[in-house]
Image (tube, rainbow, N blue to C red; front, top):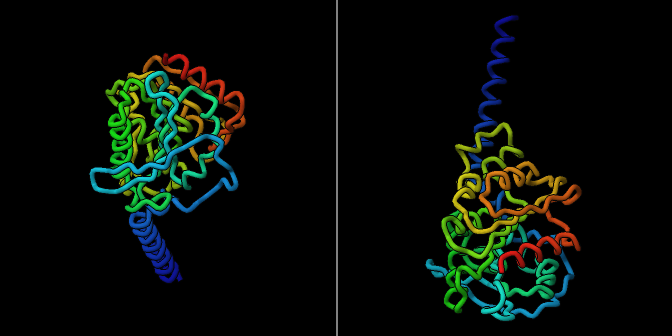
Length: 272
């Protein structure tokens, strides 16, 4: 009887190990499908109330990225370079971009490779290339780095933080930033060795200490995707001059209400 019990227990352990191993194999090869969601659209029906010009931003690996560009005055006003998050098309950011109409800013927002009809597949290195190409596009248009404000939203904070290191940008805005993708993944997969499996690590924690441009960090305590403590930690370790906009009730997609717009305007005015 005891032998049968042990044999059965050993079989169960073998099955568990096999299933766990198959889960790890699945996560390793399928992880970018879990991380990047170009077809997930959460905002429908928003109409642009700000004038934009559709442009193409070419990368060094010869991918044309769709961009929306709005120009007021590149000499008098700062230019926001907007890096969006891991889901949806540019249309999903219309509700944010419309508010830039009433600010004294120019802006360029690009869609990542594999998003909004762009060719290619997203990856950490690929997104860094996309972001770098957008910066070069603005520079070639006559906009100096010290007049560019890099704005990262969620996953886009990983690109913003990486590219802002040791550079003289006018300012950096991080909306719902994470400390690293490993930390964020552990929050969803606590029993998975994500540190060993994860390909795209986006280590914001180690990079933000290399940013000396003025920085604004925005995060809501109700965020159920990137825990609030990550945004707070990023603020704590950021260099001065630094500013925060922390709220009690905002979830991951922060509410673009009067208070947030006021915080953005205040930060932008501090850069002049």
